[in-house]
Amino acid sequence: MNRKTYKTIGLGLVGLTLAGSVLAGCGSKEEPGAEAPAQNSEASNQPLHIKMTLNFDGKEVPQEGNEVEKAIEQYTNTELDLTHIASSDFCTKLPVMIASGEMPQVIASCGAPNQSYLISAAQGGTFWDITELIKEYKNLSSMPELVYGNVSIDGKLYGIPRFRPVSRYTFAYRADWLENLGLKEPKTLDDLYAMLKAFTENDPDKNGKNDTVGFTAIINNNTLAPDFGLAHGAPNNWNSVDGKFVKAEATPEYLEGLKFLKKLYDEGLMNQDFASVSQAKSEGDFENGKAGVISATTNNVLAFQSRVQKVNPDAKLDFVSVLEGPGGKRVVADRGSNGILMFPKASVKTEAELKQLLSFFDKLAEKEMADLLEWGIQGKHYELKDGKAVRLNQETYDNEVSFPYNKPLVTVPLTAIKTQGDLDPISEKVIEVEKANEQFAVKDPSMVLLSDTWAQKGAELTQILVDAKVKFIMGKIDEAGWNKEIEKFKKAGGDTVAEEYAAAAASVQQ
Image (cartoon, rainbow, N blue to C red; front, side, top):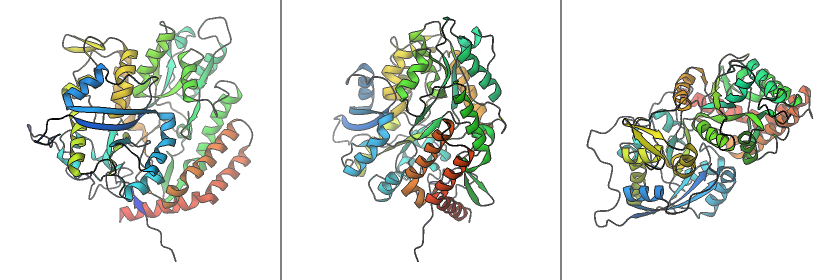
């Protein structure tokens, strides 16, 4: 009889104890003056050549050797060879690169390192295990253990997590449209519905035309945005009740959230091409004033504002995160990171070279680099006023610094390291919302668990659910049809996944 093995990805969430933590003692900082291992050997001061492949969320990759890149190279004594791949394509190209064995010295993961091909590659020795080494670096080892635990595989860390706030999902909206219509910021789902209806039907841009829609929705990387299941009381991905795991989509509360989205679709309050629209088109509709609301994260609301104002300088943006629904005030709790930066053994031949690469990323969290990555070049992207940094042009910073360098390369939070700034209202609100969201964050108990079946069939199972959501929203199936699709999911492996998660959770608690 075959025996399944149940594994865990870290021990960070759902009340699981961090016993034998992947980074025991890693949260403590070194004594003042302690230095990370030398970046280059004492025998040579030659720049370290680093080849990286990274996901990219910007519009246009800056030219090689630009002012920002040169500043990074000079400070870290490196020569950077960066390949940026659009995030919308990155997830399909990454498994091909890994399978080929042709990889750079540093490569990003596609979101959380929980894909079957990535787990198999890590367990098979494709990437360096940096669990013990990362403790030696003052900045890299300063993140909460929770973050490391949530991206570890079998208790081992195969890359540096790129820190992100745990709860950062929002709805960005046209505040000037809201003012034009005499409405107030939405606090509940009912308020959101009223706003979307007004944005669609009441000429919010006052151009005398019926040419706007409330929401621009999208399916990106098999994720439906927006998703109102959580607001109606559904779990975040999975729920564990009395030791049994239940998929969010299999709950009555999730179906109620789906009905809400279907209502928006039926009444024309969202884009009718949500199932096929590209990310560029979806964001373009928001930027160009066709749609009034878009799903966003706290760290890209400012970028949306600058892009919208490039089209319409008089436009105003705002955002809201937690909307009270039938399930109360709830928001998704994430891993606390945007994937990891991994080091393939095929390209990084020795531990000495690995340490040089770790030292490079540690240096990016020193104050001079923190100011560069968070503010840009003084006099070009920001100026100092009374000792505080003041952004000169958000879009220029986004295009030349944030998207190509900050977002893909920064690992530890730089807020306390960088020069403090004279913040605009949205930036101040971001800080407040990310902190406030902690009390409403709903965790996913499967986040730190491994299921062999999900690792093998997760993409197939997810596609069943995505297809069913599209069919239901578009009216191609009714509730009975939806329930049949859920049964299809369960029989295709969903029930087995639930059993494996339950067994994995039980093994951790022993």
